[in-house]
Length: 67
Image 1 (cartoon, rainbow, N blue to C red):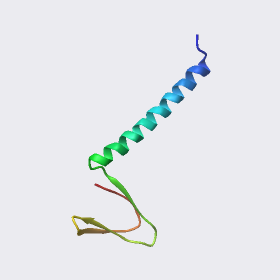
Image 2: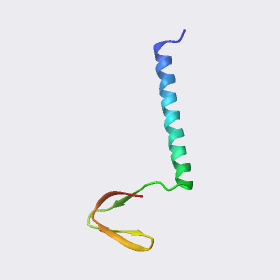
Image 3: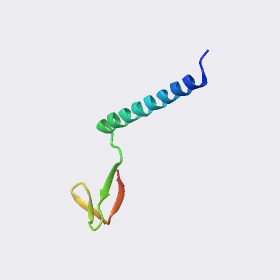
Image 4: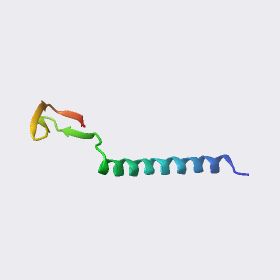
């Protein structure tokens, strides 16, 4: 019979492995299908979002998801 510590350790290992597998799947998915990208604009800078070579909008500092 397993102790509570062994069961908790096994669950922790499974959670870590599931997280790693999820990260790998996300990276592979992004190579073949369009996925949103995160754009970070530093303070005191501006960013231009381009779609198809045309400027769509001007953004200020902060984090943005670009699809």
